[in-house]
Each structure stands twice: as C-alpha cells, then as structure tokens.
Length: 314
Image 1 (spheres, rainbow, N blue to C red):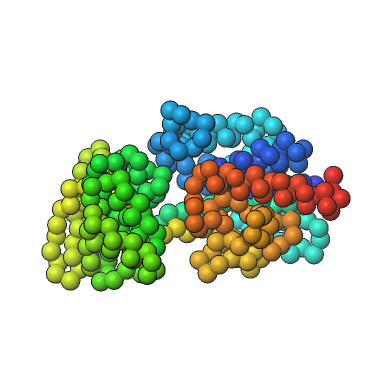
Image 2 (tube, rainbow, N blue to C red):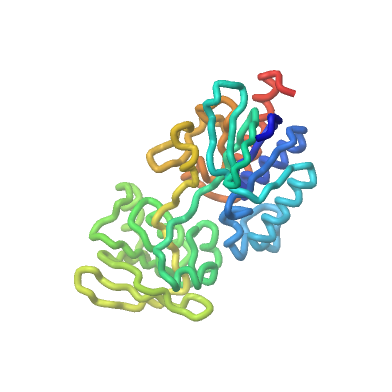
C-alpha cells in the first residue's frame, strides 16, 4: 500500500476514459488510468468507425483507441494495464480507496468511472466468427454499411424495435426475430415497428445459425412452436438483446438504476458519492456512441477538476 493520494484515478479506458485522461492530465491532475480487461473498450472489436468526427476516411476501432491512448500519455497520463477488483468509496475521509486485481491498494481524491457496458450476444459460434463481418450489436454504428441490403434484427425489446426501425430507413427488408409471440417493447415503439411496411416480424423465432464463411449471407431460424426451419437471405445480422453495464464492483456505493447503469446528477458527471464521477456507457443506456462517451469523459474530468478546487486540494 502506498500512502500517496492521487488527484485522479480513472477506472476503464475507451473513448470516455481516455478523453477524461486527456483533460485531467492537461489540468495537472496527474491521472492514473486503469484500462481494465479490454484496453480501448468495445471499439477494439469494431473494424470500421466512420461516424466519429475528424476521421473523414474512417478508421479502425483499435487504431482509433491507440491514438486516444497515445494522446492521453502525451500529456502525462499513467496508463496501467490492470483491472480494479474492489473499491471503497466510504472511507470516512476525503479520499477513496481502490484495489487492483494484483492486490495493490491506491488512494485518490477523485475517481472517474468509465467502465462501459458490454453487449449481450446469443452465444452462437457463427455469431462470434462473423463479428464485424455482417454481425453487429449497433445499428446506428454499422447500419450505413448495409444500405440497400436485406438484414435481420434479433430481440423483442425497445432496443430491437429501435434498431429495426432505424435499419428500415436504409434497407429494403428488415426481418425482426422475436422469440416470443409478442414484443416487450413499449407501445410507442411497437407502433413504429408495425407502421414500417418493410419490417417483417417473425414470432416465436430464434436464430439457430448465422450462415457464411467470411461474411454473412444468411441466417437459419427455427420456429419454437412448429419446429420449422427457414433460411433468410440476409447480409447483416444485428443483435439487439440488450447491454450489461460493467458496474458490479460499485454496487453498494453508487446509486444505479435497476439494470446497473450509474445515475448521475443531470447535466453533470457527479454520482451520489462526492469525488466520484461517471462517464461513458456505464451511465448512458440511451446513446451508447463513441462521440457521446468522449463528451461525458470530458465532463467528468472538468467536474473532477472543479471538485478539487472547491475542496482546496492542489
């Protein structure tokens, strides 16, 4: 254990964490950033990013996150490739304590949480094999690549309904695969789905296998009531069965909603714990975009800096 109290520790990387680090480092907060199990977050599994400003020709997700990391380190961020296993945000002092998975104990006056959220998948071998080659968990991110092509969306909640209606504006036919005989989506989202003539809803239907060697060229589905199997000739397969925020280690300290997303004070990155801030997909269950994550990372760093000034910590 070190007796040093850091001005700022950032838990998690990705657009939110690295942006927070850039701003915190430029404010002489000497941030320490712990990357977590996936340095760069969800973007390291994204082959093409074309909707982030400043990259007119597009960029690969891993390359983009490498540039973010280099920029953070350029200003003095201490990037550590470790996971945080435990936290104590109720020390009774003006600092917080965290422990790495290696057992190291660290203290900080401010903590910025940017642990993100992980998309839920079906668990099919073909789904994993064809990821980013026709399989996606974000229509807003990747729908552009499937203009004029037939696609499928799996899910029955608001996310699936939203993804399907978004894709229906780009694609001639959208197959919505619903494992039950009804949608779980809100009434307004259901109405939007049913109004779109090019959305075909397949009730009591599950994806059995995504077809294709190097890219998606179809999906074999099975009707759970009849057992009938059908092949749909799609070129895109969008999984929309939800996300899980990576916030378990903060439970008991941080106020969250029923699904685990961190609640922040509206218009800020403040959590219910003084000196603890949240950014990125760990607190955003609506937009979930790299650019919005980066924006909240900036907010978290600025809020943390102002907190230190207000507390008289230099």
